[in-house]
Image 1 (cartoon, one colour):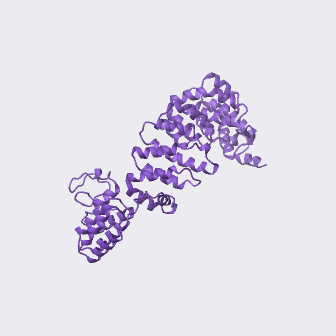
Image 2 (cartoon, rainbow, N blue to C red):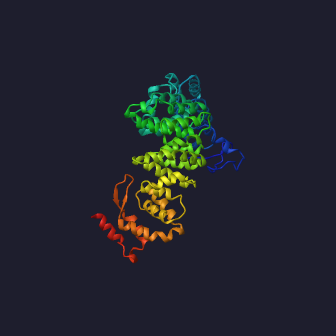
Image 3 (cartoon, one colour):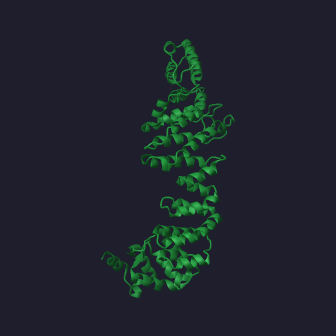
Length: 450
């Protein structure tokens, strides 16, 4: 369990404490320091179990530069052989350089004979070992060990900014069929806030275009680049908006679609309107357009003529047109007269979406019922919401009765399909089926089964 204490007086404190109640030290400022630095400071703690926890963590992290702090800790507690041997074991795991060797040699003077002998043996057999990340093969194995990323997290946290260079080197090796290693490397790089870390994330985002990658790597790298983009969006750097635009227009990354709305990138509104026809991206594009407000309205109105023209013989364009009209309605905009007249003559779902913009009337009530009983959930919900307006009351019952008698509705492709059970029940409620002598919901379901 984590131990929380004041870095100045070592009094136990609550994890959320900002100012130490015992000595008045600024605890919040201390939390901004690197994890290895805080572990080194914990070696000064008066409680042995806290020191032992820090010693073990420094060894597991292979923290560079911790050798002298560990040696000093051992000499400050000359009567503690358990701690002394724990420090020797931690020193065995640290990167070896001249400072490390000097620290180990100093422990040959430790009062506990076992500690002194262990230090002498370690110094005698010392050899230079590469610092963490200097061995590309070892670092690659660390990142690609999917079963033990907890150990990799500790190692990389101990390296601090020193992890950036090997992480970038690993990511430059290029896409893989399995995205787990690259996703992990991107996440670890994103924990570092320096300009060099940002540059590394941008290298991933701006790599070989996805369309040029082998099919076996394309889906995996799509996930990796989307993760890199989502991390970049939270950073303030000069090229951010251009990166979002590239990721949206060239790679069609979901994170870029969401970021366009969140960052208010009005220039991307036309691209977002086109993405309403994409079943994968339409939800994110919908939300982004709602966030862009007036810029989205202008882009939608500019796109309507082409959408209406394509809708005549293209079901995908028809679906995109319905989604576009729904966004325009939720933006509380007005549908111009000419597109409104044209939409009323089209597929029942398009006519229903156009009816959302009209004042209550008998013709509009019938078209809204077509949308409300259809199989497009977004359109059905919007039409039912609009029909709650009291002014539609006089026309609902006869129109619902007529639709129930017909018992079929076209789908987005223009094919006739039976009314769903839920739609039949809803229409029967509007029509007052029992009193009007219309088919009950059960009879309607039986007819559908036949």
